[in-house]
Image 1 (cartoon, rainbow, N blue to C red):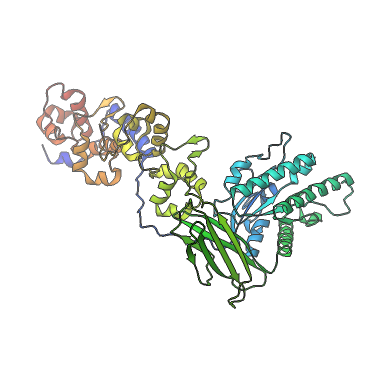
Image 2: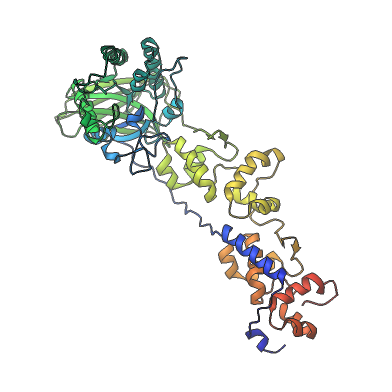
Length: 556
């Protein structure tokens, strides 16, 4: 065959070639993707939260975009109904002013406590309560409640019973938490003649009910009546602007400080910092300076002292040598002026410590337990451990919305790449890169069909047909991969992408797709084809594929 055949370009493709190339080009543009695996580094235990954590459950006055769907306030127009920097929100000001960490501000538009059927978990309350420890177990939960209950003229007794149920629920969910119950605070100025005395009386009834509930469980009460008393503090008759938020935060901190002494311990709490049981001592000082802590833990059954620390500035202690089913007593002291004398102390006894969490496998009503386990997911990836070691609800959200698309392994048994490698019928449907689809297929169909999820490091039954045309006489997946490392560098094991490269680029470049066919040998063997196709290389491949092989022509 003459050398000029290799150098000249002659674009005389047949309709079949153009159709294949156009369709394939469109499909590749939509599915092309290179997966970069995450480097699994050795994990180290992250630092514990030492600051108190403040979470919020409430209505629109506490709502902020990015936390709950129905939010009034947001960081920019279109995110939330009203623009406000997060730093201006009352709970953000409180956290900063008290040196707290913000846990989860779970406010939602139109949220209220009571309903006519006495169901206190209104407007996804249970889902919201479950999120309150998303950024660390809360030491304080502020309950901004009663606003919408009062404005909707809910029966006072029904409100009291429902609010009590909510308070009891929070105490049962978060052992040792201190609640800060906040009374409705939207009195307008005294010159407002549109409000009746009955309305004022009802607001007082609601506020007094909340105060009484705070006393029942030794919780804090913050009275916001009159905190925002002019129209300059409000966006409307209820919702505060940034000035109103400032006033609410000020009332919150002043009243909180007035209800507790200068120095004290709020709680001793046992929990999980993923790998270890921990004890956290939550204390406060209104006189400045750093608190020092001393801690002791004893086994109630034997009297043995398990831990006994010296004075230090550490308020969290890892418990490596405890039995979760044994009763323990913890004793803590604080020293506010570094004189070695305790200013306050507290004792707490547990009949058992909190077991290691397993985390939910439900997300948006779908059970992912066949492909996901919280402990495995967080332990396997260092970046996820640091982000979600105390946040099961956010871990599964990450898995569904991000991890599955990245091909992260959610449990020990299901390997999405092995599943994809094993089943060519699924690759034909889902392609190579839509990994999320493979997880969902196994959950919805594959498990019931008995499909294997055992390890599979190679592509089974590689795809060699496209648009009804079988390319196997001129193309072999394994041969093409072995002899074209540049293609493998781009497509990896993607049998669809590699076949597409052969059709779209390889035939035009004269690449050999199979040991059984060489385009230049074929062209040189048959002058009639050389005269017909000259240097239009794809035509030789297609001629052999569609007629030459059947005619008995030799391709190698």
